[in-house]
Amino acid sequence: MKYFILLSLILISCDLRKRNTELTAFHQSNEKITFVKLDSIKIDYLGNPTVHDIDPISKRILFMEHKETSQIISMADFDGSILTSFSKWGDVPDSYGNLIAPLKFHGSNSFLAYGSKGYLTYNFEGKLQHLVKHSESPNQGFSRIGFGLGLEETEDLYLYFNPSSQTISNSESRFYEKHCPLILLNPKTGDNEPIISFPETSIFRNGKYFFSSAWEPSYTVSDNLIYVVFGVEPTIYLFQNTKPHSLVSKILLDLPDYRYYKGSDTYSDDVRFFGHSKTSGKIRNINKLDKYFIIAYFPGYERLDIEEAFISKSPEEARLFWDRMREKYPHRIAIFDTNGNRLNDFEPMGLIASSMVLRNGELWMMEKPNEEIEQDYFQLFRVGLKVEHAN
Image 1: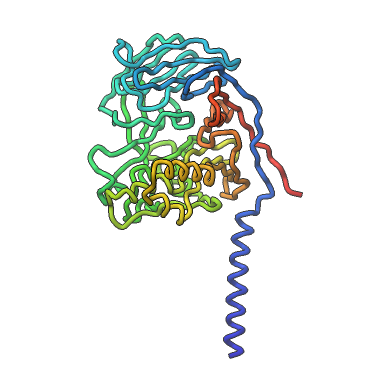
Image 2: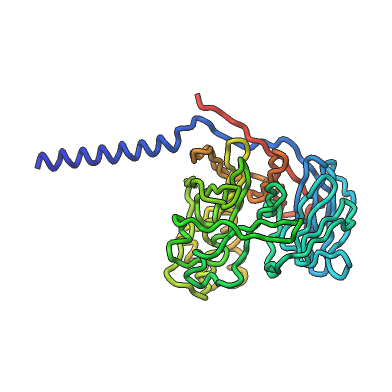
């Protein structure tokens, strides 16, 4: 009996030491990182604009008003003045067709449109300079338009999200084994090359099924590496930025109260299966600034709220429920060092968490609009990192 008690105490002590060691290893950094607003741009504009890109070198901002019958491209400067507006959508000779990605500044006096008609380069006045047609037809039924969701430049190519395989459906068990979630776009040749497979250790290789956007990647390029987070999976995967784009390592992300969908044993057309796209935690954006990773994420619903989400409601009850969920589960920002230590986690008050764009070493974000009143302007903020050291 004494031996049993002694053995139990030893095992408990070892377990406590192990957990304390893990805790110490994770919080070993004495740094705390916070956001600080360094600069702002206010643009007087009445409407519903979508910012596409920003260029700190030319001091220009590209934004669009996306309507059912028109798409107007506008360009503003850092003083907030709108310099020009024009349309390249619809029945015009130099139309991009349907946009597949946000517009992207390209060179010192031009921008790139990746559309259904090819790669089109326009100057700042809207005159077409180059058109390179696709070498093979892209997925034209998909577009992901918004600040922080665009093309990532890597030398003369652009990294982008590969929405789906044209030969394998995600309802098939081999989809995650065969599909490449990223593509390299070449605006000089019109080629697009699928790259990077889901790593064997990824939850998307565990034989389960996921709703269609569960794996939608967030990515950035830095230090000759491609850093990728696959949708709901709280892991940064590091790949070489040269062929064959091999996996280098991974960093597990310990996000507080992060609740994400881990897959189903069967594929289903049931609303509850696809409904997890609204309730599951998900990484929305990733950037690397200096030696820190900045992660924008949605934390995901608690179990009882997931159950309530699928209960039949009247239109008014549904509106009140989703309003309450938006207030209860705001998008958040987490900051990690390169060892995976979480240095801070917070709600970026007044800023749209997923709207992070890193250009010329500067981090820019969109102001969160006031939902109570109609604004006749929108703002962007340049955000820096304030490093605080514990005593």
